[in-house]
Image 1 (cartoon, rainbow, N blue to C red):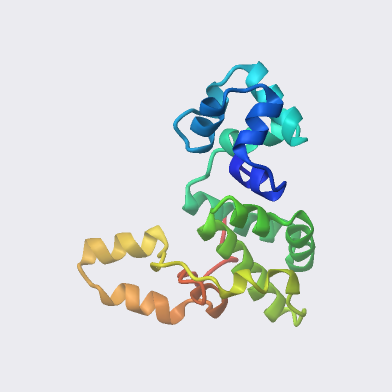
Image 2 (cartoon, one colour):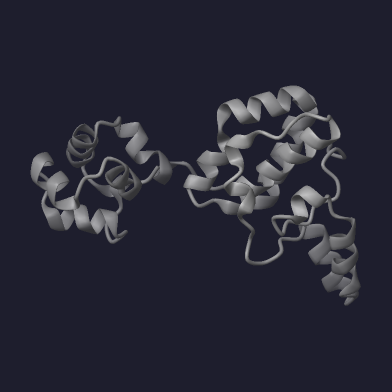
Length: 189
């Protein structure tokens, strides 16, 4: 959760946080607006903010320090995790870790929706009821279709736009619901 989300969740104003923490309002405002990076602030500033917001310094810095993986790598890691854990343990681990919501709150929508699509797909093929905790997210949809890089490359090299159309037709429905083209989640090396 970023600093703005923490402040909003705790129903605080930036002015109050600045005043009570002893950090100049303009400094806090610059941090909140992205003009100043929290990871470039002094440890004293981060400490004062964390203390005032009642979070650890690590929690405050986590959104900044956790790099976002390339989407293709993310998908590969999810598929490998599925292969390694097996269907049911994958479902349990993913739902218990609440990664879907974590990514969604970070506005990492492709990652969140890919993971939710995987959970819904694995639930369907194993006749497991859907986890109702994500019903609100299930209403979301990416603005544009995300194709696997192999499909994009094949279409570009061949000049055949029908490659993308066929990929969409062959895509797993749970993924297509979110505008993600995915037809094979088990064929990983």
